[in-house]
Length: 524
Image 1 (cartoon, helix red, strand yellow):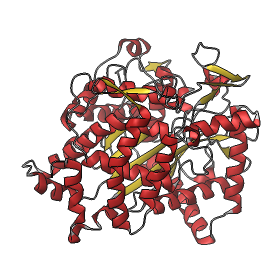
Image 2 (image 1 turned 180 degrees about the horizontal axis):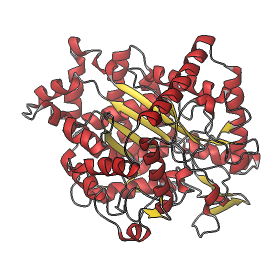
Image 3 (image 1 turned 60 degrees about the horizontal axis):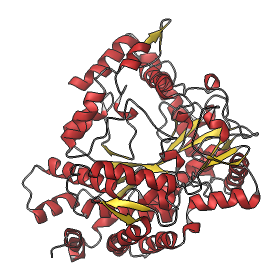
Image 4 (image 1 turned 90 degrees about the vertical axis):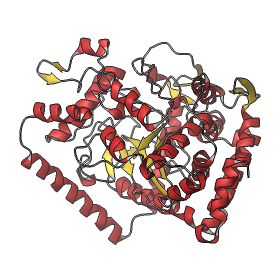
């Protein structure tokens, strides 16, 4: 069998491997701003009833004190993952009082930059490090950009798959190096084909006019409060969202795990002149962790990351270098404002088939020029993905987005079928069919539906967000947690507050010494 994808998929047709794909693991991290009854950014502290943002394993904050982040465990069935995410939402909404969860990826109406509250994690050294890191993000990129929200999707293939594939391919590397190489190949293919995801799931074709704070922009005007691009799918993922001149040259093309780690290691140890001009302290207060291109690894903005669970006090680079890649984190998914959770099972079923395809499809290195081609295709998809007849580039030649998308779905379909066979249902195939319908009819895409709602109802993006926030809050109110689950969440909140208190009580030494040890660990 000459087709690598079909040859590898045939492994799952064996009787003893028929249900292997049931053991893929899925996790979701969902961000959402808290807003007050008027729909403005909430300026209140992280609610005490939700526990400690530092030590709670499921309910924390990202950049701002108002930017909540919900984290599920990694589960074998994505349906269970979403059930867990749903329970977190119900608990949180029940303890927000009159506040709501903003449903859009692009921010609500924000106060002036100085007023946006940076997340507070208490007085422990690790809590202060997280706070100073966010102060550094404000210095480098501004607070407004850091209030953009999204979905991160964590995915791993079954551990038992790797030796099976390695034997099939006759590869002689160590098991750890083989697994890491396979995940890096998955990431290369993700770079090739990820332009499809904003077309299918992008839901931020518009942004509030106040987002630009009077600065010039290239968007069209929809109404007095709303700016947009007529064919955009995900302005969140465009150069209007996360962008950095310092990171412009930091574009790892994922030749290997070692090359990826080397590029990040250089970035977190190489000074950048504009940041050096600011310094690390001002009037005796820390304003950023260091003056390097990246303060820490997580500052690197990317659509996907190789990941591994880290030990206490360990740097991500250390963990990946020592133990290899364990899973990938997909970071280019918008919140769907029509869904209470921002994501649904149809999307996760398709993502699983898509990521399985990326893992098993032949994934050679990104040759000269192809890396830039991938970046260009993604940019065209987020800025004008719904434009009739839009052309992307494949190996230097033009190809229609729709034509290429339908070709990809044919190949992804074989992966969806193997997943369905493992689970004993047809949900992955039906999820794929739903995406094919979007390629055939652009009006079915979330980005088109958002613009249609704004235009049909003659409302601004801000009014649309308030309406959807209230609808979602009402849905959660109508579906409260059972008493046992509520009690479990309440206990987890109390336990997290106690854990933070212990950290603050037991810590020793100065913050400066802690910082030096943490930042210096990159060289160990």
